[in-house]
Every structure is written in structure tokens, then in C-alpha cells.
Image (cartoon, rainbow, N blue to C red; front, side, top):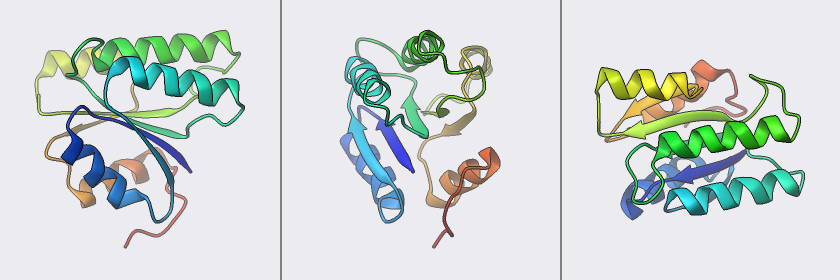
Length: 135
């Protein structure tokens, strides 16, 4: 499984990578612009990501705008709605408006930080894409 972790906090991104790297190819991006570029390159190369962890609050382009851009790129590439990358938003904000806006932008899940290993794997299980046994 190919995973893109977009998080402006180095410690948080490395921790999520550590949880997943034994069973997944993990790529890290540290801002919205870098995330969009990585996603475009993977799509163009025919190696799209299966899962994307996307921080809501980042400098420059925020996570919700990144998500909207990614869904637009998928549409332009002919990816049917619901068949693209699974996106789990990650944020310290447990605000109903932000959660609603994230799901309206077509995220698939939402985790409030700090992200714990058990929560991370439970969210992936809920999406039906866990290709390995959790440790």
C-alpha cells in the first residue's frame, strides 16, 4: 500500500510513518504545495497513493484546499468518484464546522491529534483497506 503523510509537524509525520512503514511505502510531505506535487507525480507515473493522511492546518495551502485540489486532479485523470485515494484528515481541531467542511470536501475519515497507533489502524480498518495484520 502506498501512503502519503502530509504533516507540517516533523515529529507527528515520523510517528505515523513508523506505525506504517513495516507494511507500506510511506512518503512524507510537509506542506500543502509539496503534497499536491507528490500526488500529481504519483498519478502521472501510474503509481497513485492508496491512502493519504492530511493535516488540516498547514502554512500556505491548508489541508481542506489540498483535498479539493486532489479530488479535482483525480476527476481530470478519469478516476471515478469514490475510487480515488482514501483520505484521513488529521488535526488538533475537534470542531464540528471543520469536520463538516472536511467531509464536504470528500475526505473519508478524520482523526484528532495526537494520533495514536490504535486509532490510526482502526480508521484504516473502517475504510476497508487494511492489507496487513496490525501489530
